[in-house]
Image 1 (cartoon, rainbow, N blue to C red):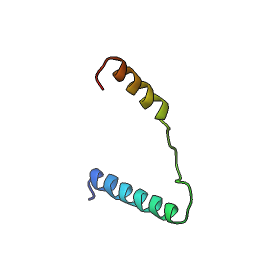
Image 2 (spheres, rainbow, N blue to C red):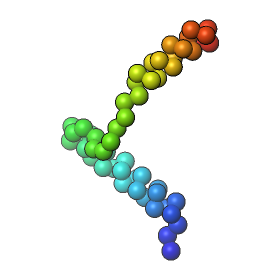
Image 3 (cartoon, helix red, strand yellow):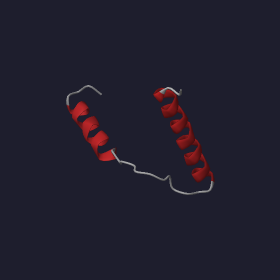
Image 4 (cartoon, helix red, strand yellow):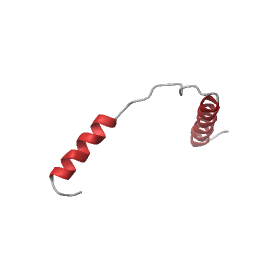
Length: 53
């Protein structure tokens, strides 16, 4: 019997291979992607405002 964690690892490895192949062909990655740039920049601004960075 296969352990569920092994299945997650196999799935993650296959996903990585698929992404690498798509990138090698010059394609955009498939699947859902979330752009968090604005959130990260906002958090960085707040940290700087507190004098932490």
